[in-house]
Length: 114
Length: 111
Image 1: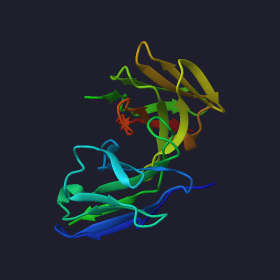
Image 2 (image 1 turned 90 degrees about the vertical axis):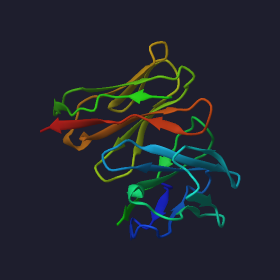
Image 3 (image 1 turned 45 degrees about the vertical axis):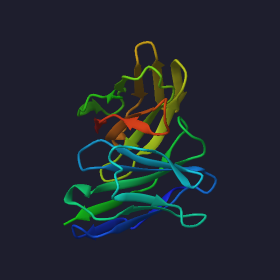
C-alpha cells in the first residue's frame, strides 16, 4: 500500500540553525501539506502546496518557514533560523484532491531544538 | 475562529464494550469529517471519514454525523486493548484546504 515517507525520523539542532525536513508524498497525490504537533498539544496546520506553489498557509507559517518541491518526488519544509519553540513533531501529508479529501500522513520528523 | 472540540478523556472501557467518542465543530460550512487514531509518538492514521448526515459503518467502527447539531461521533464496537490510543476528530475548512483538528480523546481499553 502506498504511503507517505519522511526523513529524518529525528533531527536535533541548535537554536538559530537551519533545518530541512523531507517528505515523499504518495505518488499520484497532487496536494501536499505540513502539519506540526507540539508535545501534548493538538495537530496544527502549517501550509498546503499545489501545482508548485503555496495554496494556503496558517499564521504559524511565518517568514522563517519555506516549502519546496525540488524534484518530482520530494517535498521539503525548511526552517531558516530555528527557535526553541519550533521543537515539535512535523508531519507531512498528501491527498489526491483538495479540501475535504482524505489526507494521509507520514510517520513524522521529531525536531528538537536545543 | 474555527474550533473542533473533543473530551480529552481518558475514556476507559472494558474489553469487548462499545467506546463512544464525540466531537463538535463550530463552522457550519464544514462538509467533510474525519477520525484519525494516533498512538503515542506516532502519526495520525485515518480510520473513518463521513460526508453525509447519518451513520457510516466500517467493520467495528461507526461514524455518525449530525450537521444540524454540528456533531460527529465515532463508535468502536467490541473494543480491544489495541484500540487504546488518542482519537482525533478532524474537520475540513470550507474556505481552504486544511483540516482543523480537535485536541483528541484518549481511549484506554482495559483487558
